[in-house]
Image 1 (tube, rainbow, N blue to C red):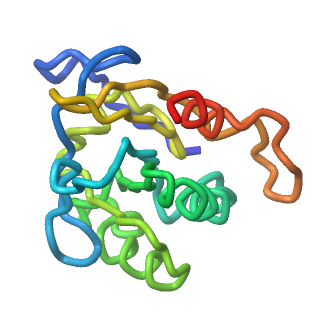
Image 2 (image 1 turned 180 degrees about the vertical axis):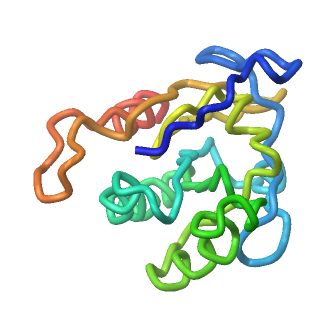
Length: 174
Protein backbone atom coordinates (compact mmCIF):
# COMPACT_ATOMS: atom_id res chain seq x y z
CA UNK A 1 0.00 0.00 0.00
CA UNK A 2 1.35 3.34 0.95
CA UNK A 3 5.04 3.23 1.88
CA UNK A 4 6.37 6.29 3.60
CA UNK A 5 9.82 6.40 2.11
CA UNK A 6 11.58 8.99 4.23
CA UNK A 7 13.61 7.69 7.13
CA UNK A 8 12.53 8.67 10.59
CA UNK A 9 16.20 9.14 11.41
CA UNK A 10 15.91 12.49 9.65
CA UNK A 11 14.04 13.76 12.67
CA UNK A 12 15.70 14.54 15.97
CA UNK A 13 13.04 12.92 18.10
CA UNK A 14 13.17 9.16 18.50
CA UNK A 15 10.06 7.28 17.45
CA UNK A 16 7.75 6.17 20.24
CA UNK A 17 6.87 2.52 20.72
CA UNK A 18 4.39 0.38 22.65
CA UNK A 19 4.73 1.21 26.34
CA UNK A 20 5.72 4.84 25.78
CA UNK A 21 3.58 7.87 26.62
CA UNK A 22 2.31 10.16 23.86
CA UNK A 23 1.55 13.58 25.42
CA UNK A 24 -1.13 14.60 22.91
CA UNK A 25 -2.17 14.77 19.29
CA UNK A 26 -3.43 18.14 18.06
CA UNK A 27 -4.01 18.59 14.31
CA UNK A 28 -6.29 20.37 11.85
CA UNK A 29 -9.42 18.36 11.07
CA UNK A 30 -11.49 18.15 7.92
CA UNK A 31 -14.05 20.26 9.80
CA UNK A 32 -11.62 23.21 9.74
CA UNK A 33 -10.75 23.30 13.44
CA UNK A 34 -7.88 21.87 15.44
CA UNK A 35 -8.79 18.58 17.11
CA UNK A 36 -6.84 17.76 20.27
CA UNK A 37 -6.99 14.47 22.15
CA UNK A 38 -6.54 16.41 25.40
CA UNK A 39 -9.77 18.33 24.77
CA UNK A 40 -11.78 15.09 24.76
CA UNK A 41 -12.62 14.69 28.45
CA UNK A 42 -15.03 11.73 28.53
CA UNK A 43 -12.73 9.13 26.97
CA UNK A 44 -10.71 6.16 28.17
CA UNK A 45 -8.47 6.24 25.12
CA UNK A 46 -8.43 6.37 21.35
CA UNK A 47 -8.14 4.17 18.29
CA UNK A 48 -5.98 6.22 15.94
CA UNK A 49 -5.92 5.04 12.32
CA UNK A 50 -3.45 6.40 9.80
CA UNK A 51 -5.18 6.29 6.41
CA UNK A 52 -5.22 8.03 3.04
CA UNK A 53 -7.97 8.57 0.47
CA UNK A 54 -6.16 6.77 -2.39
CA UNK A 55 -4.63 3.75 -0.65
CA UNK A 56 -6.37 0.58 -1.86
CA UNK A 57 -5.99 -1.06 1.55
CA UNK A 58 -7.41 2.02 3.31
CA UNK A 59 -10.36 2.02 0.93
CA UNK A 60 -10.95 -1.66 1.72
CA UNK A 61 -10.88 -0.85 5.46
CA UNK A 62 -13.15 2.22 5.48
CA UNK A 63 -16.24 0.29 6.60
CA UNK A 64 -14.24 -1.57 9.28
CA UNK A 65 -12.84 1.70 10.63
CA UNK A 66 -16.36 3.14 10.78
CA UNK A 67 -17.56 -0.04 12.54
CA UNK A 68 -14.74 0.30 15.10
CA UNK A 69 -15.84 3.86 15.84
CA UNK A 70 -19.49 2.83 16.19
CA UNK A 71 -18.64 -0.07 18.49
CA UNK A 72 -16.03 1.57 20.70
CA UNK A 73 -16.97 5.27 20.83
CA UNK A 74 -19.80 4.45 23.23
CA UNK A 75 -17.30 2.53 25.38
CA UNK A 76 -14.93 5.50 25.59
CA UNK A 77 -12.55 4.59 22.72
CA UNK A 78 -13.46 6.68 19.68
CA UNK A 79 -11.63 6.48 16.37
CA UNK A 80 -9.47 9.35 15.19
CA UNK A 81 -8.10 9.10 11.64
CA UNK A 82 -4.93 10.84 10.49
CA UNK A 83 -3.94 11.53 6.90
CA UNK A 84 -0.12 11.56 6.69
CA UNK A 85 -0.11 13.73 3.54
CA UNK A 86 -2.98 16.01 4.50
CA UNK A 87 -0.95 19.18 4.75
CA UNK A 88 0.66 19.08 1.29
CA UNK A 89 -1.80 19.52 -1.61
CA UNK A 90 1.04 20.37 -4.01
CA UNK A 91 3.02 17.13 -3.65
CA UNK A 92 0.07 14.90 -2.72
CA UNK A 93 -3.07 16.39 -4.31
CA UNK A 94 -5.02 13.11 -4.14
CA UNK A 95 -4.29 12.54 -0.44
CA UNK A 96 -4.25 16.11 0.94
CA UNK A 97 -6.94 17.92 2.92
CA UNK A 98 -9.33 18.60 -0.01
CA UNK A 99 -9.43 14.88 -0.84
CA UNK A 100 -9.72 14.00 2.85
CA UNK A 101 -12.71 16.37 3.24
CA UNK A 102 -14.38 14.89 0.17
CA UNK A 103 -13.86 11.34 1.45
CA UNK A 104 -15.07 12.12 4.99
CA UNK A 105 -18.24 13.74 3.61
CA UNK A 106 -18.94 11.10 0.96
CA UNK A 107 -18.49 8.21 3.39
CA UNK A 108 -20.18 9.95 6.34
CA UNK A 109 -17.25 9.51 8.71
CA UNK A 110 -18.44 9.77 12.31
CA UNK A 111 -14.91 10.37 13.56
CA UNK A 112 -12.45 13.23 13.09
CA UNK A 113 -10.08 12.99 10.14
CA UNK A 114 -6.91 14.96 10.83
CA UNK A 115 -4.13 16.27 8.62
CA UNK A 116 -0.65 15.39 9.90
CA UNK A 117 1.44 18.55 9.75
CA UNK A 118 4.87 17.72 8.32
CA UNK A 119 4.50 14.01 9.14
CA UNK A 120 4.86 14.91 12.84
CA UNK A 121 2.84 12.04 14.29
CA UNK A 122 3.47 9.71 11.36
CA UNK A 123 7.18 9.73 12.20
CA UNK A 124 6.71 10.02 15.96
CA UNK A 125 4.72 6.76 15.92
CA UNK A 126 6.96 5.17 13.24
CA UNK A 127 4.09 4.63 10.81
CA UNK A 128 5.41 3.15 7.57
CA UNK A 129 2.24 1.91 5.82
CA UNK A 130 -1.45 2.69 5.74
CA UNK A 131 -3.76 1.73 7.22
CA UNK A 132 -2.01 1.38 10.56
CA UNK A 133 -3.82 1.54 13.89
CA UNK A 134 -2.56 2.84 17.22
CA UNK A 135 -4.43 2.07 20.44
CA UNK A 136 -3.94 4.71 23.12
CA UNK A 137 -5.03 4.40 26.76
CA UNK A 138 -5.65 7.67 28.58
CA UNK A 139 -3.40 8.22 31.60
CA UNK A 140 -2.90 11.27 33.86
CA UNK A 141 0.31 12.21 32.04
CA UNK A 142 -0.83 11.51 28.46
CA UNK A 143 -1.69 8.45 26.39
CA UNK A 144 -0.06 5.09 26.92
CA UNK A 145 0.66 3.42 23.60
CA UNK A 146 -0.82 -0.07 23.89
CA UNK A 147 -0.63 -1.21 20.27
CA UNK A 148 0.74 -0.16 16.87
CA UNK A 149 -0.04 -2.35 13.88
CA UNK A 150 -2.67 -3.82 11.59
CA UNK A 151 -6.35 -3.46 12.35
CA UNK A 152 -6.90 -7.17 11.73
CA UNK A 153 -5.52 -10.07 9.70
CA UNK A 154 -7.70 -9.86 6.57
CA UNK A 155 -7.02 -7.38 3.76
CA UNK A 156 -9.85 -8.68 1.59
CA UNK A 157 -12.99 -6.69 2.45
CA UNK A 158 -15.16 -9.59 1.29
CA UNK A 159 -13.69 -11.95 3.87
CA UNK A 160 -14.21 -11.93 7.62
CA UNK A 161 -11.06 -11.38 9.70
CA UNK A 162 -10.18 -14.19 12.09
CA UNK A 163 -7.88 -12.08 14.26
CA UNK A 164 -9.09 -8.57 15.14
CA UNK A 165 -5.94 -7.06 16.66
CA UNK A 166 -7.34 -3.62 17.53
CA UNK A 167 -10.52 -5.01 19.08
CA UNK A 168 -8.47 -7.45 21.17
CA UNK A 169 -6.29 -4.63 22.52
CA UNK A 170 -9.20 -2.34 23.34
CA UNK A 171 -11.14 -5.18 24.97
CA UNK A 172 -8.12 -5.96 27.19
CA UNK A 173 -8.12 -2.37 28.41
CA UNK A 174 -11.88 -2.31 28.97
